[in-house]
Image (tube, rainbow, N blue to C red):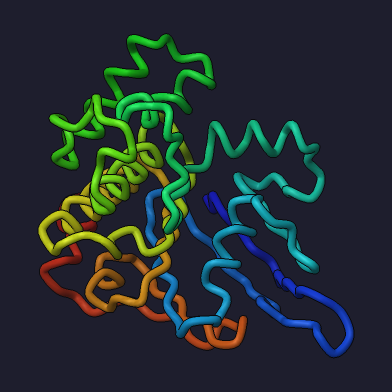
Length: 238
């Protein structure tokens, strides 16, 4: 079953001579338990694809469905509920709340969804521990390094029962060992049935995915299976 389906999706900004086509006729289907890597040069539409997939932007044309439900027919409140309960985001600016500790940032979505504070905190601490941040749980974002903030954002995106994970360069600020820990956490989420879309320019990172989609000038120009390698642990671990 497809968790995410994008049908002939287009996105344009501006009008007339200043009109910019960010996406054109994009079709993408991501099934539960799989990871799709999206690659392409700067300006190819990768980040726009993520924001539309996650309902943060509306397409100019085409249709986006999550769990077979079209986003175009949902109210603003329903979309907000969908994002809170079903979609985990990891974007390059992290979007951590400065007044909350690392543990509080991670557990907040669970609490907003009705999980008791103590249970939410325990799940948050477990996710942080998996990324080597147990000793930083009580620190605020401005007390963390860029790489640590990125790992907190990853933990927040995968904690709980989300169905779809959208990640924009999730290992960009990390060393190779920590980047591997991040990918293992994403893969663990996929093994629980999460569908993941990971934007990356790193071929080694893309090799962890089940499929790779290449974008250029807002269009899908190729789809392929990544080459087998030591990083492709998804099938080996299943």
